[in-house]
Image 1 (tube, rainbow, N blue to C red):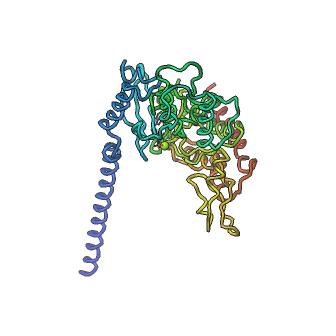
Image 2: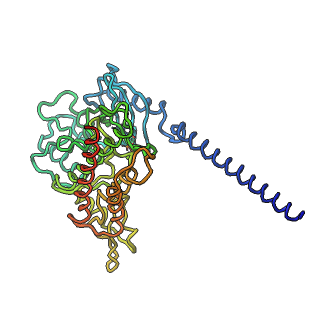
Image 3: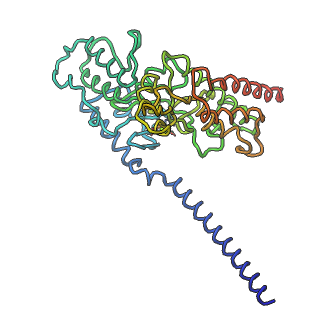
Length: 411
Ligand SMILES: Nc1ncnc2c1ncn2[C@@H]1O[C@H](COP(=O)(O)OP(=O)(O)O)[C@@H](O)[C@H]1O
Ligand SMILES: [Mg+2]
């Protein structure tokens, strides 16, 4: 009798202790997460207002001394129409700064903090005059662009920042600034593709080694719908149904982008770092790649993938995989998965899995099933141009039908 009483008492104490322990653990977890979220700046060593302002001040000093130039320098350094707002990111040394330009938000980017960190154009050091033949300079730029993109450009391609015509007194600063920009792969991609693709960011101007791009609604892994839908035209008071419509439209734009990168350039364009943070949406819900540090055209992709290996895992380059040929211990040059499979896995699965967006938003089971198969196909397929992209048309149809059904409910 007493023994069983003790046993029950001990069980209760044990249960109570476990309960308090769990509660304490949850409280600690919430506290630490909130603290990290609020004080992100503290932990990203370089991303403070003070440091960012110092970097821009140095940029302006270099501008005023005539070392660098660009169409935004006057607004940033003299007229104060381009004003620092906050530092967004500085991982791996890359600077991403939000600024206000004539009252509109814009983003300033540069791979390195200071102009002096970029390689100098040695030709400029040798000759102070402006006698360098135009053709020689053009060739230099074309070779640099080829190095960055791994592409031979046709003669008709207009090169980024190439200002033809008369040489101004700032010619040397112009050339040095152009050279610092050409050393930034992302800038080269943005400037070459912006006229031919609605799925890459527009460059709105430059100052020295900094380039300014349009400010868009960026994705976040922690956001329930990945992209905040509050700023979208006509969705101000977004209810569940409007959100669902917007998600269909954004998903369709992702598919359009996949198709475009697959077929519309002379070489396939591979996205090797696919995550919500590297995409943004415009007001009309067009999907845009905002981070092109890990984007490669086919020839460069093949060079990257072709490594020595002893197993398949050695052939994974971020989101771009190939297979290890064990007879010669070399990774295949052809990528074995594709952009769509990774987008299905890392973006679509977030939207189209049961219950993820709460009980108010649910999607047709067939759509969920296809997204799941598309995401899982990367484990089973060896890609060929038509292969797993078969999911493209299936997903496209399903999304359009679902979108139309939703519209009909409204009519
Ligand atoms: N054009 C933009 N509009 C809005 N936010 C942006 C833009 N560009 C970058 N960001 C924000 O800054 C973050 C970091 O930029 P990104 O270019 O991805 O740098 P990194 O190469 O260091 O990842 C993005 O995840 C996004 O939140
Ligand atoms: Mg990024």
